[in-house]
Length: 548
Ligand code: HEM
Image (cartoon, rainbow, N blue to C red; front, side):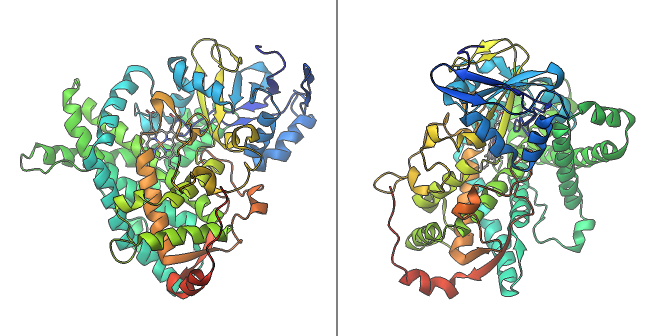
């Protein structure tokens, strides 16, 4: 081990490396009872014992509900911000880091050595096929090239922002207005999930499932069965990743029983739905009068004409895989981010006031609360507050790769051939060494310069959207979506969290559930108050002092 003693060594009862579209590498573990000294520096104590059933298992079980915070504690006590993880009975090995220098090697300078590998492919192959999220090498390069070209086009950016804005005006705001009028408690996490799913299906397919607001017809409509099937398939994929004994789901798959049988059915529904849409897109793309393609699928139909396929079926599979990957990417990521954002804002009234003041000063372009793409760019404080929320609650808390050959990270950590290499974005947002003594505070001001202008930070310190050649392609889309939604809701309503929101005392014990995405446990029940009713108090409150 390089830099002897600087790397905390952990024996994991189960090393469950996984990822949702490259997302989670969760390291469940029991901790080896080792103590060692870092020469002249500090003495680190590691808890537990290697054998399951010992106190170590209790340590893990005891921390299961706060798994990510447990990882924070382990990483922050390691001088290299890195721990070594040994799988049950030594069957697997890996490392987990929160160190930007480690990340630099992992995601950038030795990128080709760290792949998604079999672990991803075996879990996600039915749902994602050979889609961008699930593959390495040439298959990935070809898709990345096409997709990143499309994501740079102005026309796609406009299409995305128009789609979000029109659905805000016609669906989300009317839905929340009705809940407000009837004084209902709504689960904001669920509402946002439905809304962003409708959004991403529009952007990806040009099809609107209308999941938000659909009632009885949900049972019958084709779109709704696609929604349910997709949701179910993601849930089962997540269970596969988190399974301590993957052999169990593999046997169930082989025997076609239980959840695996239902999973197969869900994938069939998704495939049929996607195929029908692809066929109709192909037809409309052949039509010479067809307008410039808008949605991603139409764009990919056009741009993939330069690629060579054996037959039409192969081409359709390619299109299906790439578009399904995008739906997966956009499905719950932004809604998860927004849920934590609204929770934090509800617990920090002075930030809420600053955001509202900024919105009021900018004023929406269209009735009642839609901010244009250009206006959104001017909302520096909102941008800072969203980034600060992402720092503390990254939707993808841990990410994982597999080492093709042995390597040494920038901080001296040895990574063996075939080891998994994880980084915890959740832990990185909570490292004093990276963010200072107030790292656990929600303080949007840390992202602003003295003129109140947003200052981006080094991606290696803030890898919420990953970094390097595989960095998230939808980052800009995600910000447009999050800012549009947050601006519209906050301009129109005061959002009151039933539990009081993420005030400073609660931030240290956040209510997350252990899954691939950092979902809020039990949802986010809120009440909405019309702004008009509270505007008086806002206007008369003296502006808070910015702490820079
Ligand atoms: C707050 C919202 C989002 C966050 C935090 C986020 C984060 C991430 C992360 C961490 C990765 C790396 C995954 C990996 O390879 O291990 C990723 C990849 C990706 N994201 Fe996002 N994402 C968000 C929203 C979106 C949206 C809305 C889209 C577009 C529909 C999108 C499209 C993609 C794609 C296509 C990749 C794969 C890139 C590749 O493998 O080359 N993301 N994202």
